[in-house]
Length: 219
Ligand code: DX5
Ligand code: ZN
Image (cartoon, rainbow, N blue to C red; front, top):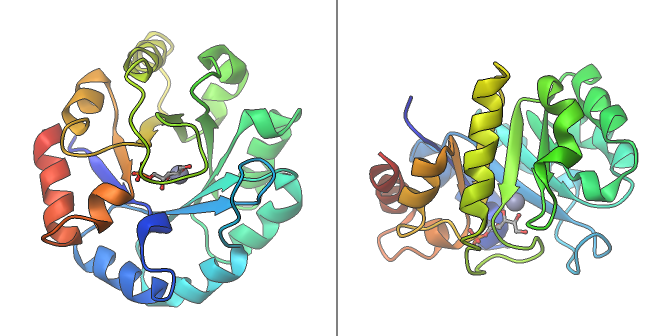
């Protein structure tokens, strides 16, 4: 199975999201990664479900919405209604992770759980059979353009081993500092999905060339 690419529009031009999404879809992105930040769980505020509604009509590429917010349970219905296909939540943001995962499922979207760099896999052990994806943060969430944390390669390997040992099916996504140099490392460690912001949007030859380079590096 070839690696999937999920470009993060956090690195796109904030004045032209719809154009960016069309361009990514035409360049065959597997998902569009949408980073939602609330200024509490992470220091920055980005955008809410209105943005998801606004860009939903311009593409059929699945939206993978990464919620870096507190009180996610209050906002999940709006994000799903707006057209999010997959919703990622952080265990560090809630004491009721199991409930959040099932809320996402019951609303008809695919649940995913993200791990901050300091959060161990055991924090999500009891929801692994309920979710479609584990997102391994390879930077501390909050900003694009940060350096990849190499210790996270072992976390990706452990997760892949745990999945195989238990006959589970979740995909492993990697988010933060993914570029042409780190893509081969995370792919070899067991990643199925590369989430990349600056490596895609700041590539001198455009988003299509950037995605080809990531795919080739990971092959
Ligand atoms: C960081 C976000 C990432 C971010 C990645 O909090 O979750 O999705 O957009 O950006 P790069 O690829 O530039 O590290
Ligand atoms: Zn993200």
